[in-house]
Every structure is written in structure tokens, then in C-alpha cells.
Length: 313
Image (cartoon, rainbow, N blue to C red; front, side, top):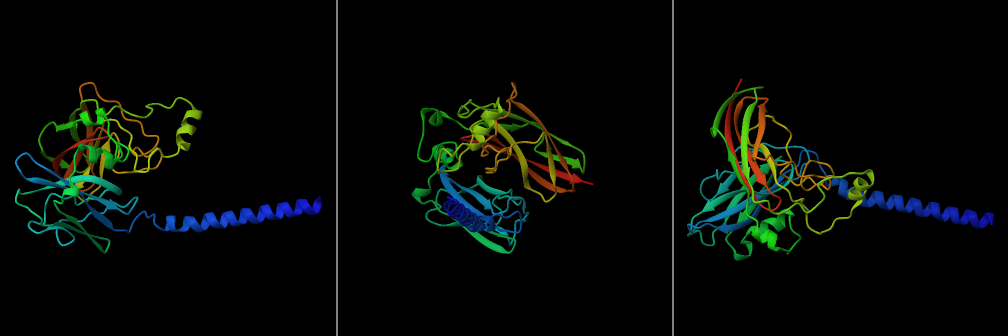
């Protein structure tokens, strides 16, 4: 029995060592591909949609390979469009990770089969996104909701088909003057139709429920997003640090648990003001000219607004 016990123990130990080696080995490539800073930004063509006047909007986003670094790249030789004007309203400040449907570029009705190319050079790595009006890149509301994770891949529902984007309105002047360290009020009104209804729990009452949600396996193969109306303010252009108060949900796909992101498992949609008015302040650490980007997102669809702030010492 002792011999047998020794053999079983030895075999179990060998299996444990093998498993530990295997887990360490397979985890190395994953860890090697996760970066806080120093990596490039991949521009992305998300698709196009027609406008009532016969023109077309080409939709762009990006993948910032960094989890923490938010690079600033001025419009110019490292951030430009071609052919035509280099500045097509693209961001110069890039939030972490995947940002879909960040901005749109309007092209004329006679654009035809030409390509519109967005070139980015970040941290010494140049990447390009090629936009065309090919039919398989046509985007509608169902595609947007699906691509951002509000719907499962290739699915829809009467609720999702009835959903219309929220409407965001910034109260006050669209151009402001401010000083470093002095808060700027961003009074924002949001209208929404209440769709889609939140599809996940809005509250966690017990430790057991919290643990169950944390251990829940992904329910879909594509990125998952928690439906629920929220407001986000971020820097679109400008190199200084801006602090928003109160802290707002992230508009980028931070899938980490409790990351204050609709793509995080434990995120809860914030309470909606009865009058639809959100009071937020922005405080600037450095002088300069900034474009701030406000996004109202109901989980499936979104609407954007911008404000320019010139900050003095």
C-alpha cells in the first residue's frame, strides 16, 4: 500500500507540475500581447451609410493597443486623410483599446469607387484604414447595435428595430474660455425613447449573487455590452489632462469587471435624471485649445456633441 500510495502521489505531482508548466506556457503569448503603453493605434473603417441628400458618411474608429496610454497625435504627417483635406474631423487624442464608430466623414454623391485613406503613425508604427462604398460595408442601426455588443451577432428584435438614437444637446455656448484649474460647467440634456430596455440585472443584493455574476461564462461569442442609457465626456482633441466630475462611464470597450464600462460584467446603468439634464464639470491641468466630446449612448445607438474650450493660465 505504501508503494502504491507513493506511486499515486508521484504521478499526481507530475501531473500538477505538467499542468503548471502548460498554463504558464500558454499564458505567455497572452501576457506578451497586453501592453500599458508604447504600442501603436490601428485606425479602422467601420462602414458607410447614405444621407438623405445623396451624400455618404464613412464611419471610422480605432484600436489603441495600449490599456493605459492615451496618445496625442496632431493632424499632419502622422494623422491625416487622403485624397483631399488632411483634416476630416478625426480625433487627435486616442482613448485606450477598441473604440468603434468614433466619427464620420461625409463624401459627395459622386464619390464612386474611390478610396478614402486614414493614416496614423503612433509610437513609430504607421497604419492605414481604407474606406470605400462597397455594398458589403453598408451599415444600418442593426449593424451598429450588433457590432458594439448590444445584440448578439446576426440577431435582432422588434425592440431593437424600433430603437432610435438618443439626442444630446449641450446647453450654453459651443466655444468657451477657461483657466487652468477652474471648472467649466457642461450642462447636457439627453432625450431618449427608453429603448433598448436594460437586459441585465440593475442591482446586486447579496455576496452570492455578486459571485455568481463574476463567475458567469460569456453568453455570446462577440463583444457583449450592457444596455442602458449613459452619458460620457472625454477629450477629443487637446494634449492636457482633463478631469470630469462626476466620473462618467467609459465609451471604450473596457471588458474588465467593475471597470465603469458598459462592456464590463458588473456595470450598472446610472440613474437617469427626471428632467434629462446632466450636470458635469471639466477641469483642465494645462493651457491650450481643447475639443471635448460628449456621447449619449443607450446601449444600442448613440449621438455625439462637441464643445471647444480655450484654456489660459
